Amino acid sequence: MGGGPGRVLVAVYAVFAIAATSRAGVQIATRFSEAPVAYLLSAVAAVVYILLTVALARGHRRLALVACGFELAGVLIVGTLSLLDPAAFPHATVWSGYGSGYLFIPLVLPIIGFVWLLKRRTAKP
Image 1 (spheres, rainbow, N blue to C red):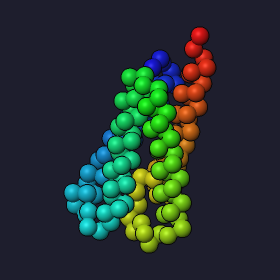
Image 2 (cartoon, one colour; image 1 turned 60 degrees about the horizontal axis):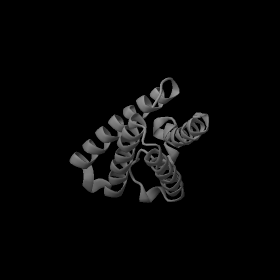
Image 3 (cartoon, one colour; image 1 turned 30 degrees about the vertical axis):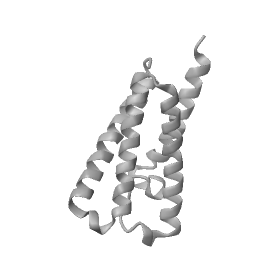
């Protein structure tokens, strides 16, 4: 994994894993019938953040790249759909509005992850 930026990236993903898991857990346990699609998407985001935290921490580069790609696709697809058809997303998800509820960090984070993973690959001898 290394140090510096890699550790910060793991820490940010860990925070998002905890936040998304907590949010999805409460939503599913208390209000699932109100917006099942939105709440299940939050749970998917939580799983992706957990997977990325573990993959980055353990140095599983390929898995981290695939998970970053899935995360970015999820943010772009859910973000676009939530803006085009707000009625389909009556309650926000982690990825709604491109992560606007989380200061757009869900949109930027996989890009930073890709850059770090690709830069780290070329930096190795």
